[in-house]
Length: 420
Ligand code: SAJ
Image: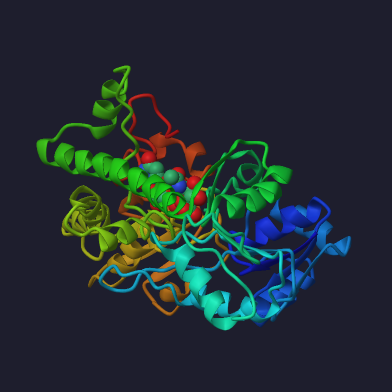
């Protein structure tokens, strides 16, 4: 089978490599020439366990190649970004451009699958873009199973967790949302080849909302944990003890408070629900506000503590959006470090084992330095734990006894010691 994967980013690249490893002829189409060149050289352009190995093998065997234009294929998988615009409206321009780019190459029997997380109605929008571009072909309408269209269109939302992408690509259950049942059946044929989890068939709108609900659910639950941490700070109660003891209840499972919510998914996707149903999505909107507020609370705390010192040196442990990834997108830890760096009189030592250089936004600041954890500990007045990278979990809590510590992730301050 010939498969065209549109967008070779965090989702498209592992998906393309996985499909190629199953013997399909895969063309990765990306508008970024640097990404195309890297993939053709067998090089992953971001770190992810097992991805490099999978990609090298796929390119070496000739099953995967990349190009800056699509080709006629049996299946098209669209995995391009769906960011949010200021104000919360989704930016669907990448999906629209992807659909417009593949339209001239479609043939009778092609199956177009949208994997990008998208607002309800987006799969119908993709079909409409294709319909306008190819009046010579027929395209499905939502839930209209009376006639089988020439081209099938579906939404099969990606669900893989950065840090575990390759494993989850195979093992996770999948939601297959067809514009029609016939469409879903064709997508199912593809996913059942490499997914060991269960593939559940539904319609495209339900699939769109399922994916958005998953990330909104997590956002709301993290917001609960973050709000609890703020309540605990105010009432001078240890949040880690409260969480651990509350979680002894058989029906309670409080997530972990932290520096805030980052990444390109959970910090973004709930806005798509809020934007579609603003009067109804009150809790989901509030969760976004609570989580976005958390970094500011940490900055306020650190700057207040810094007043005790003359020109305080603040060591920040971790700057990526979550543990054990090198991904800085929407990172609350980075937001905190940037704000501290801009605070008069503060020097900031950053340590992050996943990075070999400072993030671009910090590189030119003379009061910010990337250092190893040992130097950060020795030279700092205040220590701020922001990301629970596995290397930090090996740090001896006793070495911080003479420091002022802001432990936003419970790295050294949990009742039973180390963070999980
Ligand atoms: N976080 C907390 N406390 C927690 C758990 C997470 O503060 O208890 C923070 C993390 O540090 C990070 C953010 O939340 O800043 C998001 O991290 P995450 O690991 O919860 O999720 P993502 O954004 O890496 O991946 C999510 C996953 N969705 C769900 O778990 C419902 C993944 O399965 C999706 O594929 C991905 O979004 C996506 O692409 O949509």
